[in-house]
Image (cartoon, rainbow, N blue to C red):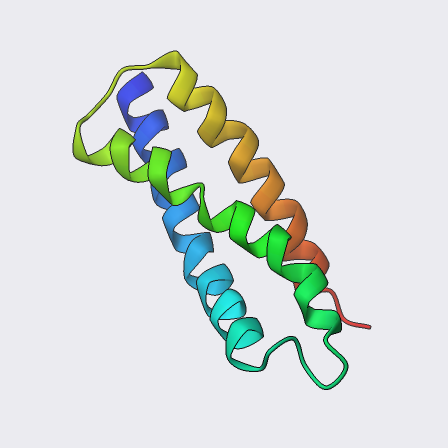
Length: 90
């Protein structure tokens, strides 16, 4: 039960990072946009991209660490918050 929960958290983080990796690359390639305001979003997207490290460790090595589970749980909440913020129609 716990192993499937840990793996599902990691898989969701990896799937969300497909979107945020693209956002990070677009911001870097565009140099922040016309006036450079996109650079302000780069720390948010890079912090979500860093969540790939504990997610991959959790899947690859099948760690049963509660610390990694907590990091992945809070990271998923953080990523979902920003995903909803970015995808919200204006």
